[in-house]
Length: 239
Image (cartoon, rainbow, N blue to C red; front, side, top):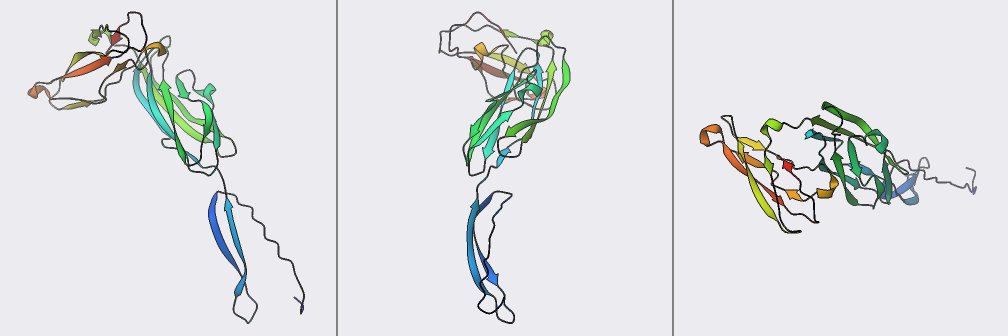
């Protein structure tokens, strides 16, 4: 620069990622003098940052014509409301994600319900899998989720039937005996499902049951509770 010359300085801020509030001093170096502060810059870059707490949801074995639901957490670590939509065409034959589309506020979590419902009309399949199902994020990078499950035939030889009868919104309970045929303790995770949505949530039971080894008696009682919310037709629950 010539003596007494004035030169404009242009500062451009073009962030590619989300940035928190920042302060930055820009130093001017004029040889041979010591550097000195020219200007101070302050800024922030708002953005979307969504994350699935699990990238794979595996259901294990589910009887054809019944259903099993698990929870999946979607978190927004960003600064703005984010809109999402699942590509349900890829998995709707065997899975449902609810809500399928919507929005999530900044710094909050949303619990999604993922349901596996293998068709009763289809053949049993030991490997039902949908890899990297896309979830489109408006203004952000898409998320991907893998869905897995097995559809099995109902084993009628070991099926026991429980018949429940009670008034609406009143609970009745019955127990079923689980027998351990091995010499080691069993810790099992029972699942309860229905053939349709009309009785979803009416039946409940503990999520874990410990069955002692054969040498220690080898039996445990599993209690099933039935609390209908509406009048229903007579139905049977198979365990």
